[in-house]
Image 1 (cartoon, rainbow, N blue to C red):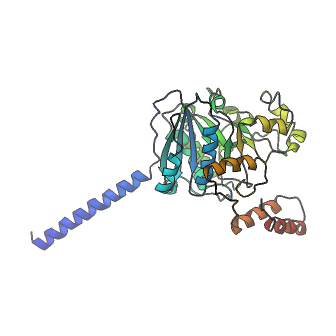
Image 2: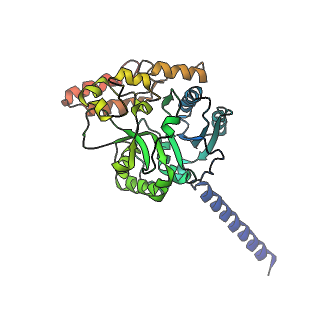
Image 3: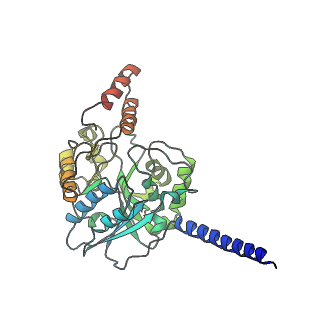
Length: 356
């Protein structure tokens, strides 16, 4: 064989091996990882998802969670970091202490390629939310895991929530209780979810969630509608609203929806919204209103107290114009008014001072 031909052949082989290696590594990076079982069987296992936009708010949630835990509780926290840089990952690890373990699980949004056919746009929810679908598979070596959104405050210990009996269920979750609501249709708020991992694995829940998402193009939320459609009512254990006190709850919910009756036996000692707020363990800033934009909203004062422990120089943020337009459209669209009135509501919301 002539030398030029031999050299060309060798180069082709090297190139082929290089491409094979790159493809292998790329596929490996795009594989959803499986998390090893923790060594401490008595720990409370918690998972968050976050990305660049929400990582700062996650720090506030972590600060409140750690400062308000019981001294005897051991927290094992996993942070699914979606396309986060090394610096931010390192900052999140600084919350680690003797009784709080922090594990960063780097993920990429590209991992969803081929798994999610269409991503629904939702102006106040991150695309990181999709990774909730994969929690059962990622934590298949666990018995239980508690998922928490990043837009929360934790004002007490989580042991009682974590020890909820869900032996025969897939999840424990809050029933949605905002008025008006169809009382015959039970809906869940999935900002806080306690997973019975082994039951989820047996039922192949991740596949059911992906199938439901890919065959139901529901534009109301990224994952909320999917969980509600995929999980039967009898497989979701209800939890007390003290573990998911959504800041959009109003006094009207108690009056028109008979809040106390529908949450029996959780609320034997809670007859109104003020009593619920006093006993709250987890505040959930669900929906579009967030305390970092609106310092006058409910529970915002408490949120800012923890935020300034994280960063003393933190100031109120301004919404992007696009977000303001989208939300103003949503507000005007959801009112049963004529076109002229809806237009006034749209512009009134758009240019409102201290935008909510």
